Amino acid sequence: SMSIMIMGYLSYHKANDIISSKVSQVALQTVQQANRRLELLLNEYANRSLIVFGNREIQKGILGEYRESYDQSHNNQKISNFLSNLVNVKNDTLNIYILGVGNASYRLSSNGFAELPMVGKDDQAQEWYKQIIAANGQVVWYGIRPTFIKQNNNEDAKPVFVLGRALKNFDHINQNIGVLIMEFNPEPIQLFMSEVDFQAQGTTFIVDQNNTVVADSNASRLMQPSGLNLPSERSGFLTYVVDGKEMMVVFDRSKITDWKFVGMAPIQNLVSDSREIGFYTVYLVIGFSVVAIALALVFAKQMHKPVRKLFWSMRRAREGDFDVQITDVRSDEFGMLFHSFNTMVTRIKNLIDEVYIQKLLKKETQLKMMASQINAHFLYNTLDSIHWISRIYKVDEISTMIFGLSKYLRISLSEGNDFFTVKESAELLESYLSIQKVRYQDKFMVNMNMDPTILHYRVLKFVFQPLVENAIYHGLENKQGSGRLDICWRMEQQILYFEVKDDGIGIESEKLAELTEVLESDEVVGEHNFALRNINTQIKLAYGKEYGLFIDSTLGVGTKVTLVIPLR
Image 1: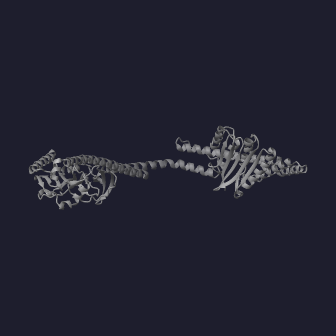
Image 2: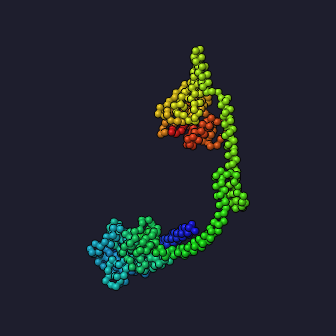
């Protein structure tokens, strides 16, 4: 029941998140489409201002390049016709102001065309005028706002969509000769902003780089701070709390003006569909919970009897009665459990009998072995006697070999432990080498280097000597002339590196690859390399898989085998 409630709760929240995300993405796409539509309109406004920017008659009139008064009136007529035609092409242009700094200014408005004196110092001191001059001929967008230039009529109070750009002298392109102000009817922009529909009582507006509202659908927030702190990304969506309400905010930045087209709607309205999912989930949870409780009661009743029987039988087995068997025959999971229990108890009884018999047999075998075993002291004493006889008869080779063998056996057989100290390992190795030096005479020389700080650490008993034996038999024995054997015991960060290096015949690359595969694999690969594989296995079992043997060899140059184990 609890799991159903948790699943229902998580499902509802997941559905809510998905719906919120999808609705936000759809709203963002709607705002992006509206912004592209706005960009088309603003592009068209910019093109119209460019036509004014490039008009020769306006240039001539501002600069006053007239030969006679007739020429001036004729030029003014051309300017009037040009501006009137521009306005009449589309009836959304309200006012055009050309504020010249040379000879004259011009105005086309609802009052008609007029030639005016050149722009005054008051207007030149205005912030908007300075902004237009600073833009150096590029369009400066002001959005929907009150007009900059009052005409002292009823129209002055109505907001207009304003843009401006500096006018340049065509003959001296760096010279500003005035500014152009164009005012458009804001209704087309307001209309399609009001048409943006989130189906959630949302609002749309446009903000500039300072997050000030420069356009909205009903002129209620113009020139006011938006109250939003939008990120610098080109577009996106986020949640914002406005007047205590959680709002979804989507925005898209215009490539033309750097303004952001913003859509805002209450999240509660956007995800109203998810509430239906919430109610549906609650009904499902209640229904499933009732069914689950009913089934649980039935199931518990069915389970109680066989569980008690199994528990009673297990208690008897725990008390040592391994003849107990459950006689109930069932076809369900409890039947399988009963059968497994019976098999297990029978197997345990058989194993106890087997182990008991094996212990008796082992004891008997050990007694027989002890009866026939050669006494270790007898062996040492015999070897000692041979050693002294060889000394008397001055057979130094036999004396050395017998002394080495005696010491080798004494160390290796002592106490029967699997581990002994590094010092004892080194002594065992020296005893072995003393025998081999006599056997091989001048075939090779040995250099053993030992870190004295590691002598007291305990290590595996029989993993060092076989590596030296391999180096002599496989590396140096078949070499032409005498060889060299370098043995090094060193410790780095509590890790023992035992290195056996010979300058013998080396190993072929194919054979070396096979050896490396044998050492790296957990599987038994072939019957060869038994000694190395056995040592490697012992190390990994005793210390862990990261330790073991590592071989490096070059044919004709020599071989280095490194044994790596931790010192404890």
